[in-house]
Image (cartoon, rainbow, N blue to C red; front, side, top):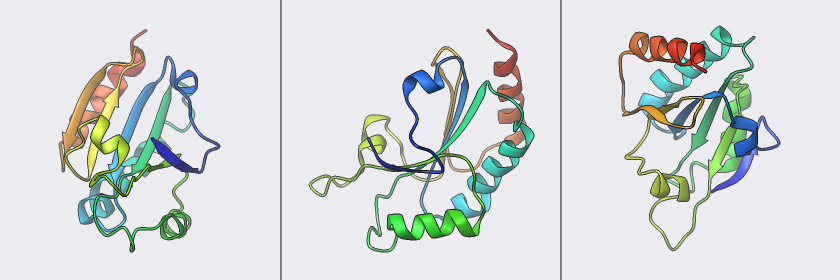
Length: 146
């Protein structure tokens, strides 16, 4: 479902086992992504930088404007914004209107964020903006769970 990774050689389910996972589904030209979810992910990256039991992931899931939101432009954007967490490029199949991950996980649009506990259960999934304090409190709680 991921055609290419940026800032990572690629992540496997084994890599993520036993970790809290925060996934930001975003697009380059999404205003909510640029003003809300991407800065939030960078904030959380700094907050949890010393923790080994959390993984932040961005999924660039393009469902419109494919010619403007290319992997080359994404790599340039990641470099300009100094984004350091792994970013996967959602696999696009030209015969489908939506990319693979978006279809399989019923992503409604961008930004959409999911928080998954250490046992692989989705504990939070939201499209658009949300109360970041509540989400951060959930992450902190999940990090204390076994």
